[in-house]
Image 1 (cartoon, rainbow, N blue to C red):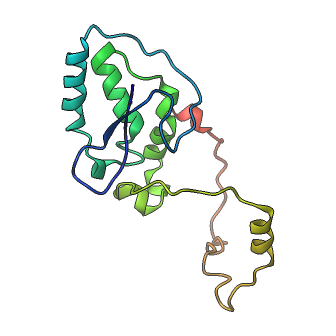
Image 2 (image 1 turned 90 degrees about the horizontal axis):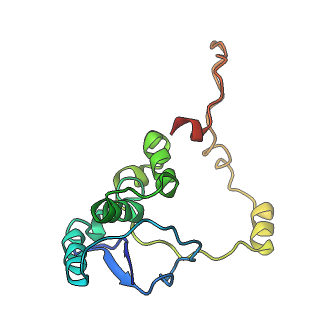
Image 3 (image 1 turned 45 degrees about the horizontal axis):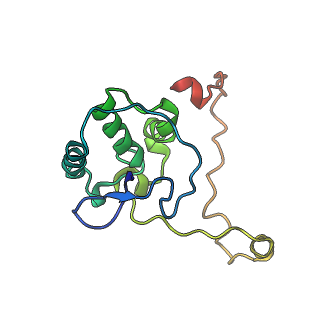
Length: 163
């Protein structure tokens, strides 16, 4: 069995159990060996039930408390080792640049993951051919930079260098 943590609108646990490699809504990509535990099946079940009390569905947060945080907590408790650093890298980068993220991601838990359909050529054609209302064309643009500032030459840093 496989255990995960997901969002919902209730204060009950967001931890769930599914058949291994078959989690609905996700595409299985790779198995990563994380270690073993000496717990019996009964002890393991008790451990998961206790941990589930700390992971309520309405506390899920894409950056600070997601499914990878749950998996890391499980691994640390069962094997003494964390999950590989690359697994939750995007959330760590997001936490560093929290002020740049949409406010909904900064402060509120993720509701439900939307079901997205693939973008088609028709979608792209309708975007390029759709006109905009008069006066709306500038509402999403940033203001022009001030001319009284001198440019600063700062070396570019990649996100991987910040971690």
